[in-house]
Image (tube, rainbow over all chains, first blue to last red; front, side, top):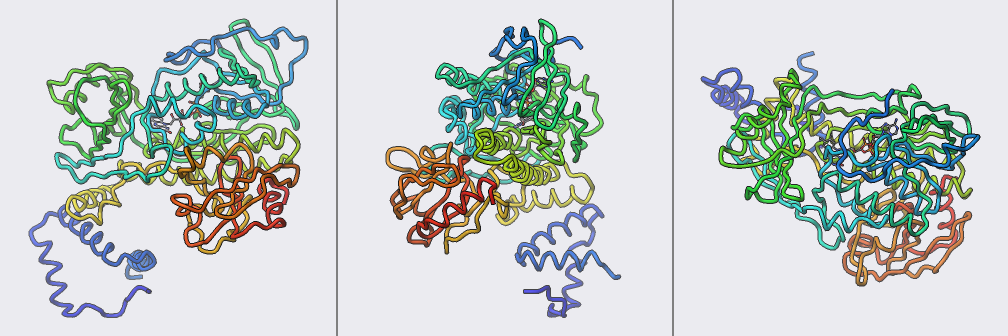
Length: 64
Length: 537
Ligand SMILES: Cc1cc2nc3c(=O)[nH]c(=O)nc-3n(C[C@H](O)[C@H](O)[C@H](O)COP(=O)(O)OP(=O)(O)OC[C@H]3O[C@@H](n4cnc5c(N)ncnc54)[C@H](O)[C@@H]3O)c2cc1C
């Protein structure tokens, strides 16, 4: 399985709003902690080491 | 430099005695000299001496140091010392534990059970003070000597200078009676992490220093803490950034506190300050006595190569790891196990000197694995940046409710022996569907056999093991006589050595690592694999 970078989330606007909502009212530190927990939960769900490595590489490249 | 003790002794085991070498008109030549009488040096002397190889061990003290340091000794170490004849007293004295608890602040995050696999002579781990471990080794040297093993332990013999030549080494030694000189065909450097020998030879020792200090306190107390390993991240009692509580024999408990980077060592080691931290952890009503305290800064580093011609390094002198995961002494004992038979075959002319390069290759591979594991543990326990701290605590927060996060919690991975995957002495795996754990390069897992255990029958020499397949009683190959051993394909032996295969033949090295395996006995493949395993290929 390769990293899926094609659109894959139904209701993208709704998801994005939910993501921001989760951070509502949090201090920067609490937000960073939430992101870390979220990332770990999602990474476990994916579970495929090769995909995770690809995802890390894609994220590290950022917008370049 | 005066010959003063650098540390207090727990047991005085080899008091200085004048050697006839000191009165010889010319330096006496010895086949093997070991520098350093820590656990690794003494085990080396024992391994070689039990093979009948004359060995002289030089240590600058007269026995075992007071500081306990290592407390966790792994199954593989006990199996190796069993082969030397001193595993049982270690097991008898040691404390066996299976349950570990991990806390964050004031909450228990989870607990784990080592769930030891059945059918092994030795448990996954015992806790035992290092001075006892060393004493049992020296006790075994004494009984071996009584049975004729040519081992000499020379206390208060400090090596001050070496001259390393192509085919021997000259050593200058200080003693209470003044200096003398000896020569060695082979010199084994087991003189510890700050190895003076390494420095005398101008050799490197590179790696990472972890920017943190740990206060180690061994205490005796009459408290009813269970025999478990308790580890706190950011404990509520604030005695350190992390803390560890672990039981040892004689009612002694090991406690570690992570102090941080910028500390005043002398101040922190004052009894009142140590007690302040302990009181906060144990509560006001627990009475205890301090047995030993020390502060360590942990490092992970190794030499570029463990062999320099006639000088071979082993143990902490060759590689140093942070203690999370207990890979220091445990890996050093594997060095000894690996080196002993190879040096034996070189000394008796069966193998050429180049076999010793495989010691360097295999044990560097082992050291890298250990350094990797203990660096990862240290990075988890002592996060080095804000974001690594965030992730660490995210893992701990999740682990409390979600089993998936528990394997990410790293308060030290258990020391297991390394598998020499893909290294030159192995013959590629020829057993279809054989279990991965017994692939070439792997240490043989133990299993019950008749009234005892399989490992009792392996080690010391090359063995051809037939599992459900008949093998000849003896086979000669390349100057070696292999011992054939046929065992029934049943029970744990079947699970661990056959898997789905109906039968198998294993070539097993003297250090109980698998060199090759096949589905059937083949009189031409075996000698080829033997040649490879002794570096003749
Ligand atoms: C806090 C702590 C906890 C640890 N916990 C564990 C654990 O749980 N499990 C584990 O496996 N390991 C553990 N270790 C590591 C373990 O203690 C070491 O790996 C082990 O002691 C290494 O043994 P060695 O024989 O190589 O060196 P050492 O024990 O250092 O012995 C070296 C010897 O050489 C002698 N010597 C030095 N210079 C000279 C000279 N010039 N001439 C003659 N003799 C000389 C010294 O006096 C000494 O006797 C721990 C270490 C620390 C610090």
